[in-house]
Image 1 (cartoon, protein in one colour):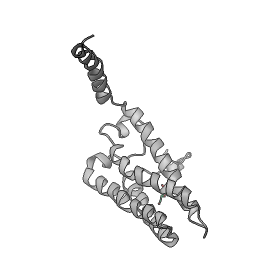
Image 2: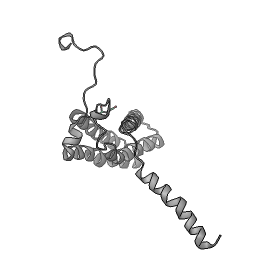
Image 3: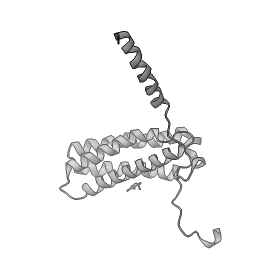
Image 4: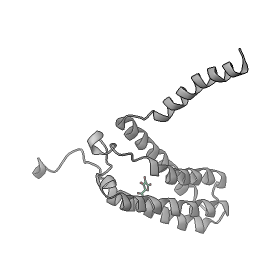
Length: 163
Ligand code: ASC
């Protein structure tokens, strides 16, 4: 095969493959499931930071790993709410306000992505009081978004007057 023919062959295989991957999109339900799992991971990492920063002799390596996960998720989450992945697509606690008030939602997400690096910085500096303070700030960002953009957990037995 000539060099040119080889090039042509390779691009005939490679280009459509890249395009197929680029246009591939998860279904809304797959996106919801992935999002849910991402937040489970974020919650686990956040709790690991809490558990590892309570004593006066923390496991700094474990703390750094968890704080890094929080930082990464704080940025990644900005891609987890594609249009069409709200309540219209299936069971989710994500409120429609996420999509109807995008500026407010972006601000709420930014609160986390601005605070999380301070947590990681305090961990890297082995500054325990700093970690504890930054942890509170990060928790405040979680709570703010949950209060405004996540529906409360459904109780298994609704009060009788609601049925
Ligand atoms: C957690 C957890 C959250 C946050 C939030 C902080 O442990 O799972 O979602 O803390 O409650 O206010």
